[in-house]
Image 1 (cartoon, one colour):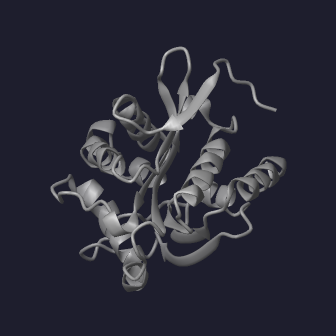
Image 2: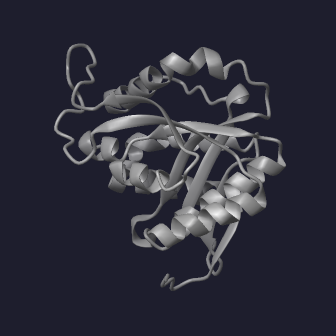
Length: 231
């Protein structure tokens, strides 16, 4: 089904591959993520947020990357943190990025008290799932989800929550039967200081807060097979 020119390795995020992973995430979001594209954010706009996030995520040992074996270049990444040790960035970004972070704050607001009830090692925050544009639709994201879920289960995590900003990503995630959509904010209606900053995003209608259970390795393998067969 897939036509990869290079053999890939799936490994945990580390200090050795962090810079390449950061570049991968920033490039993917600048080129593909609907909020970043709508607000015309560049890789330079995104780096001050994503690079510290990846550094922070090393503490929790939940993040994975897909890299080219020959060169070590990271072409895909799944970045997670422990919600009890979540990433709270310095809020000194460009207004464009601040709009996006405020949207996420409002998306989480109805659930923030609930999430703080979970002990460390139980609830993960799925921050980022990114694959470089030229490597998309090759099964890399599905494989990253599989290894991430199985690894999270082995470490004792039982639940992951996160944001879905793209209709394409939502369609993909809906292939997971256990996915729960907890809260949604319509882009067309969302206002910051009386300004509808995300209006005009016709293809992508809303931002979703999702929740799903981590699975053991055998269950994760089955879910992956189901997802691939439905593509």
